[in-house]
Image (tube, helix red, strand yellow):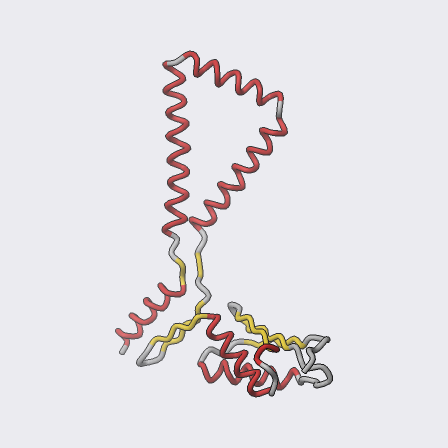
Length: 185
């Protein structure tokens, strides 16, 4: 059984974490193009005087427009930081995982949110369209838009959401907000 649970943990981890291959390849590609362009410019400039003169003229023109050069530099810096962050920082998919002795379960956050919304609507006696649920990393946010003139008890909504999460096997803290203005029945 230990062997299976280790396999389940590995598979579930691979499914809950996004691959960083594509962003890393993009970062390396941009770096290679930049390095190759710089090397080509240096080599070409060392053999062709027109290229050196053109580069010198361009640099003198940039001195006349420092604001433009600064804006371009900031844009390139931000693009570089964005690409670097995308390639290096870990990615997570919005999925929940659970293992037992026999199985490993993977549940998408939207499926869990819909289950909580359906359960809260059914247990609190309100329409499904009046319940909105967002499943975060550590908490579930439930927003109720009650029918006008019919008060909703936040504790009963919290208990209903916690019951659905407990039955599904994905316990989380629940935050409930009830809209001050209701909908017409």
